[in-house]
Image (cartoon, rainbow, N blue to C red; front, side, top):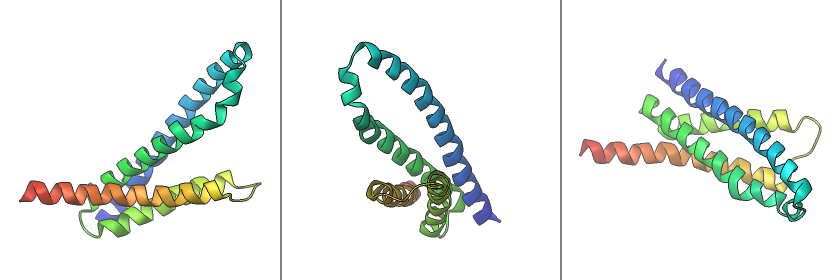
Length: 133
């Protein structure tokens, strides 16, 4: 039962936070596009924000989800974190790829999300070992 609770809590955290980040992105994108009408150079740097802000933010959420999963599961942390990562990232990719193909960037983000979630669980394990000693 603890395993299901850990997977559900980690997945729910990731999904809810990602949805809030997407909402924030919409608000920021609308303001950015309004500014880009007056300042043309902003159109040239639009793509960089995805790599400088979007992907690290996504990885931070995945890391936190792995940490939450590990703190609830406490055993078989790597397995639980991997399942949470595969469920959440796979679900997001599946819904996003309904009418398109997977790109190299998509594959890299998928792998980074898997690593970030497992790293969050690993960090919890290391932090928990230090606190118990």
